[in-house]
Picture 1: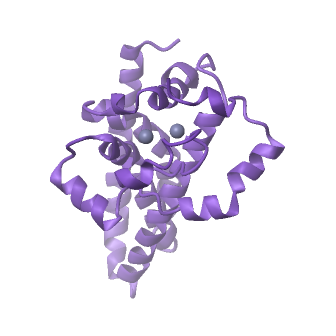
Picture 2: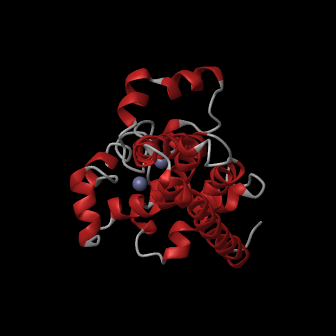
Length: 220
Ligand SMILES: [Zn+2]
Ligand SMILES: [Zn+2]
């Protein structure tokens, strides 16, 4: 089982690695801004990343809410347990420092950044930018989630929540009502409409039965 201290070490490695990779990608992108239409390509990638990061947050959240156990190797004690504990005590994620709040999402964003590093922005500008901005959205997901639970979030968070750019408390409350079986997206919540209208996750659960029963997800 990973101790909190050893997990914190991995979170720091994730933060340093993801920051270095993001800067590296930016350094590769900047010279391409002289390409005709490059600004529009990047703007389009940012819009797509807004939705992609939210969709990824929903899929990851759904997997860790519904599958696996707290004694699952590596992920169980650190990641899966935190998702399950969050339902029992939603406000326990508030008040953590930056690394504890965002360290795990830094680690999770590394595969996206690796894709951005592999591609050449000279002829794959949209995709390199998409991977970069999706990873940034993913990296900040737990920060936005935490703000949605705080009684007094920062003013900038309230502004972003009201404009719909990040997850609002009202929207996220839908996940914490009932049996935690809907509205899994937690970056900005925009993709929940698609997932809930298609019931795609629930259809997958019919084929691959969850290891966690719904009533065991309910808060105490
Ligand atoms: Zn949940
Ligand atoms: Zn929550």
